[in-house]
Image 1 (cartoon, helix red, strand yellow):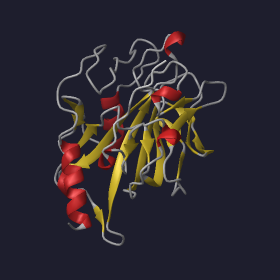
Image 2 (image 1 turned 90 degrees about the vertical axis):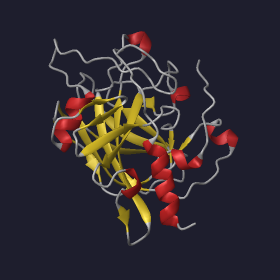
Image 3 (image 1 turned 180 degrees about the vertical axis):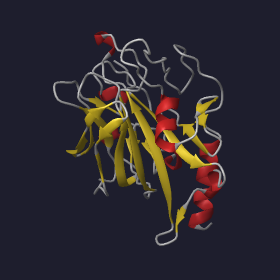
Image 4 (image 1 turned 30 degrees about the vertical axis):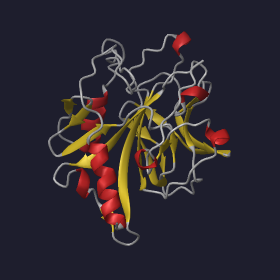
Length: 252
């Protein structure tokens, strides 16, 4: 099987993820519930509005996904976005609707701060170019005088999911034809990660709009991880799916 065929099958598998309807306050197997934002105080934007502001058009819900007709943001199973091996080509803050300071880092052996966000709402600055990523890492949301949260649920103080992730695809190419980098035969992927920055015991609203980040990269070669290293958690293959690992939840 060629590398290209393998990636087409992988991306076809992604297309089957995120089916069904998730309403505010309701949990669905594999997917964390996302509450509606508080429009009455500070004019907070929803995930659909953040996607619309960033990529144009009007994104509307399509089951667990969002689409503007030209592009679709496909919701990634929350068991599968915890440990990453995506080779990062760029990161960019898209929006922040929170009183706390926001920042993003990665942790894989050691910790590396990628950027700190300046600004509020859609008027934000923060990002990187290519990042020398380790073979496997977790994403870290942090900020001045605020608690650190990880993409790995079990590493958070409340044991809860604080990040939901979408794969952004071009509908004209659909999943199987996501842009391929002809120079290195690796698939080019764009993810959007939405963060919640308060723990459950601090009255978090879990609307996942405190920090929105775009992460672009190439699919990395999946390397089996020692069980002791990541406690059996799933690996996000280029994100997570090609690895085929499933997380064994370790909630406090």
